[in-house]
Image (cartoon, rainbow, N blue to C red; front, side, top):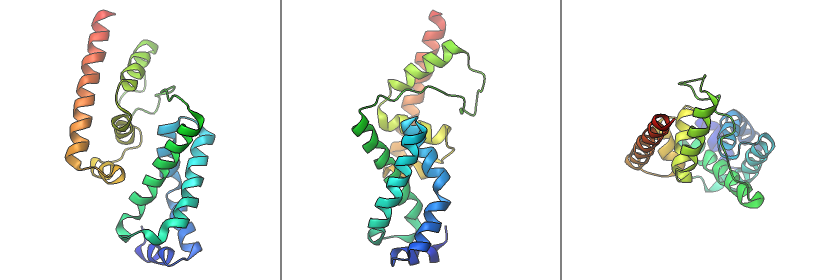
Length: 172
């Protein structure tokens, strides 16, 4: 990201801010969609994040963390939408998984159940890594956690999921 633009945005330059958030439009929408699983709600979360970010950009301390700062706002806005709508999030469509595009219906249901059994924060981490391609370091920054915490939570969750899915396969 262009540090000069970020500095201008912090000083109140609306055009600079617009350019910056427009560069993050795809990432912001995808991140909101991994949480909300609804196109319109995801757009709303991104737009609300743009508005909230504009009001609070002057509080950004480190220019290099603009992207992280903005994506945290997107996550919070997505969570606010969930609270307002009292929606239960289900993984209706896992076609975006990179490793295996041809998961049969039974495995899809098992995977969905397995993911739903994970705590919401760890589920977000897994989505960010495997659906959106974020690196562990980026996930740690966005969620304001240590890299060790992210690795540990994801390792444990994926290990448990593998076991759960393996047990389910052996039963079937």
